[in-house]
Amino acid sequence: MDVLMIIGSFVIGAFFNAIIKPAAKTVYYWSLCYIALSVILVFSYWLLYLTTAKASILVNTFEVRLHIGELVWYGMFGYFMFNILAAFRNELTAGDNDELKKIIRSTLWSGSILTANLFIMEAAVGKIQPFTACYFTASGYAIWFFYFILTTEFLGGLGILFHFKFKTGVPAAALLMLIMIGALYTHRNNGEPLTRAHSAIIQFIMLALMIVIYYLEGQANGQLKPYNKPL
Image 1: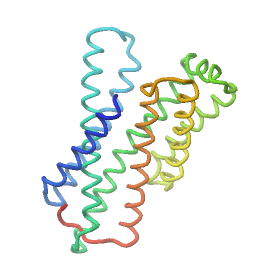
Image 2: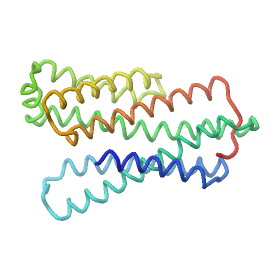
Image 3: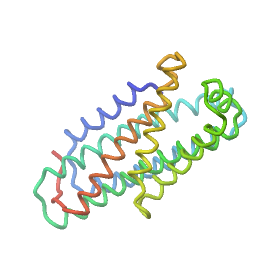
């Protein structure tokens, strides 16, 4: 999907946060719907990959709806992220702090589910499809490095997914960002058009935003500020 469309969706979501100011509990309920959307998208990704009728009209229609769902997802991420940022600027009661922590947790769960799936799926698909290994070797890399990257992406995805249990989100996201930088370098070194690097750019941006949310999670758990309504 085009990078500008995703960035635009994120900005629109942030804009809606400025004009739509529900109570904190309402925002929390919305964040639960956001988790459900992430689960639906993950299921749709795997369904699309596992289907055999790749060129059918039905699959093409499904892909269009999936892209729309992705745009909605990034827009909601922008909304919740700026909602959380705005919350840290308010003076609120101790009870409302619990709502802030719930919203942060739900936003992280949603981001973790989708982001982790993308890297786990890339590792799984890359190992199965011979084209990926051929691309690595044609780019001048040894075959062992190909399997190293796949393994790292898989473990990085698990690190993001199990952040709430082992607090591995930040190192996992940082490691995957380094891999995305390497991917961008490879595309550039091969003289490929920027469109070939769209996936790496989007994932890099998403990982950076996840690190911001991880930081806000730490701030909320360490020294809470009251939460009521977004600015």
